[in-house]
Length: 99
Image 1 (cartoon, one colour):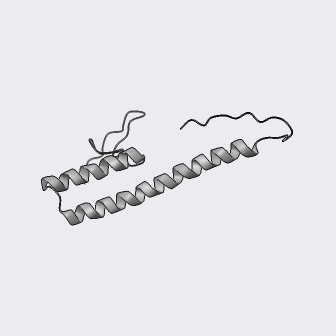
Image 2 (image 1 turned 180 degrees about the vertical axis):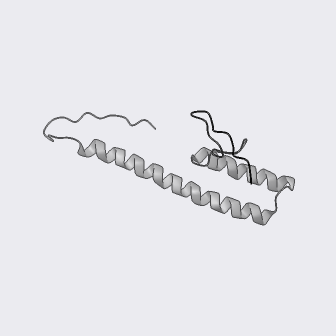
């Protein structure tokens, strides 16, 4: 029988999050950072080329998915700005979108 772990203090996490030093692949910059890390490992001989190829392919799929999600979000913002005008006879204020 394994001993029970003590309860965690309020607001703390156990077993979640990224390992120290890993990239946040929920952002495009993190995906690119992880691709670069795999490439450096291959160049230094720590990781086989086939393994790096597989990892980079998977990261490219994640990158493409993130890019589409960003595009869709920005398109929705543009559509909201365009179609939220109640009275088309009134002048429309043009706002610049911030990324």
